[in-house]
Image (tube, rainbow, N blue to C red; front, side, top):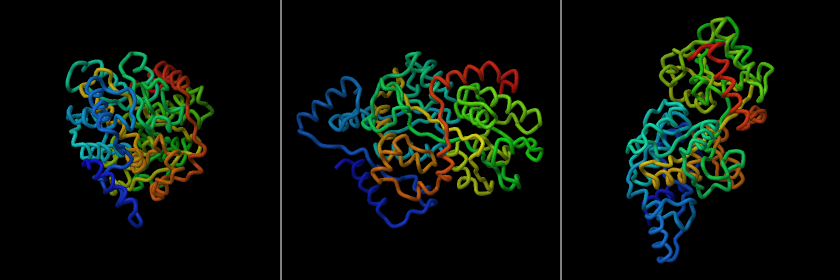
Length: 398
């Protein structure tokens, strides 16, 4: 039995233990793997699969070629990722679990980078051993990267169970998790919890409202503008009211130019943050002194997803594909959920009853998520163009 198979059995055993508490699950940063089962075949077939993998990385992940992919990835011995903050959607635990499971070192560069910077790194580091092997970008950036020829095609072995709206059917990119825009706040500095975008314009929130990134370069910030638009008479096809809302929030002195990071949350520099629910929800247990609480804005419930793509010229092509297999396995998807993000394969896993109930219970009310709206790729592209045109003049370049 391979080491990673033994770890898989250990993970299943832990799932069968009596009650999991939310705090104990968050502490299990070394949770072993689940869901990337290696099915043995005839020795000749296995040998042929290994030879094929050595010749060229596979286009599709299958039970027949998985052992060969693992062997090839271990031979490469390393994986480069980029713009994955350890406290974003539980990426810290995801990376450490992948590394432990397969014995592959991981370099995580520029953890606070933007989607635009991820694509740029593929271009500027082409041929460099430091180049990212895989990226995690917003949909509009995934489309741009595909058009620019930055990515290669790959169909992970669970590709069929990923919703059609969250993947490129040609295999260039695949959505891995989604979240909804939320309002996080420091209860020690904000006595009256803001529950809507309308609330955030009140005088009591002067110099307190921040956002994760700039919509000129950040997918999460674009999502924040979408949510503000929905709350102020706009729509998925008309994001301008969202830009106007931020301009007004700045005009009344509430919106500050400081972009939210874990450090600004911990220090109190950003008392209120418009950000993905999984980021805001994770800050609570991570920074107890900040007394961080979260509301889903009732007047603008917007959801969005991120996309995995493999660098077409990355230095570790097999490790990149194994990384994708891991992320889309049951184990990887559960780790996203532990980080408060909805995994792409949530419906499939829920129907198969493999999701521990405490993980679902830790999320905000399902009634709020029922109101969530998702923009199409065309709407995101149009919104991005509008933001680039209107945001600098109305709000500023930050």
